[in-house]
Structure formats: structure tokens, C-alpha cells
Image (cartoon, rainbow, N blue to C red; front, side):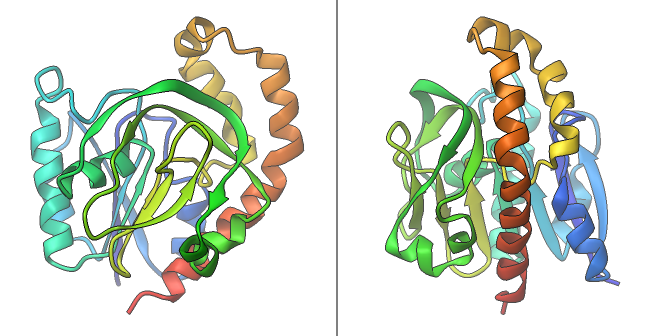
Length: 229
């Protein structure tokens, strides 16, 4: 049986809809908790997921475990293991591929449409064309050399990229099921308060946009998994 390893940085930011998709394909899923667990087993995974979190991938001095995590991601890419990076995981992929990761000019918190490149429209990201998806990040990154930009927003030029057929990096969140959204409002309460986010408005927009985003997200991940060599 094949299995996927998901590196998780905070408990409520999990694989979401991806978990069910992997199960349907007979792929087991195991979580490793960053900063707590030995991440060594990630080196032997058939698929590596690197999930989100509220820290900066460049904060190695504050979170020393990131050095080991980045090393394992680099090893996975060199071994030609399929890798999906989401939010912090996307930034980790950029860092491993020698691109600069840094605070953006402003945070993106809420539902927005991605501006897909022509390559993005022709990729699995075509599933989200015209669909609002969830942004929840303050950091950004430069496009790594050799990577293909797939999506942008007005604020953030690099929202998604591919690095060959086996590495997919998504700054935004299409893995989050609507039913789990309240966990994020609880877990990120300090950030939301400091950013003066209207929770009532965010809940209303989630009820409006999440159902379509969940359908599109499933199709995106299915198409990407189907296209793996």
C-alpha cells in the first residue's frame, strides 16, 4: 500500500479534502507534527504534503526544526517524490528551490479569485478559474528559477507554481472543507483580531463561496494526482 506523509504545523490545518481523495485511491495518510515528531519517515513517503501554519519559513532561528524540515523537502524533490505544498508549505518549496521568502506588503485574508496564467489555465488549476478561493497569508516569495507561475492576485504576484510535473505549490487554501472553517476562526483568533477582520462577513462569504471552492479543489487535486507520471 502506498502512503502519504503530511507535515502539519498546527493541529487544525490538516489535509482537509485531500485526506478523502487519497483514501479513495488506496493511499494511506500519516501526519507528522512539525517541531514534535521525528520527521525522518517523510523521506520514505510515496507522496509528501507540507501544510500551512502561522510562522515564517525563514524563522529558522526561532523554530530550529525548520532546518530539518526544509532538508527533508529538498530530499523528496531530489528523489522525484510528488510534493504538494500549501501556504507555509508553498513558501517552504520556494525556499528549498533557492527563492527568497519574505513578508508581503499586506496580508491577504479572505475569499478572492486567482488570476491564472495561460499555463495555470492549462494545468489542474484550471478547475478554480472563476472560483473564489481562500487566502490566508502574510508572507510571499519570489518565483524559483525553473518554476512555472500558475496564479497571481493583485497583491501577490506568486500565488501558485509548478516545478516539473511532481511539485505543486499553492499559496492559497483549497483543501479546507467548509465544515472545518470555524476551527480556523478559533485557532487564528489573535491574527484575525489584530487584522480587524469582520468575522460575521467572513462567515457569510464562506457560506457563499466555500461550496464551489470545495468542488473545484477536489477536481484540482484529482487532476493533479491523475497527471502524475
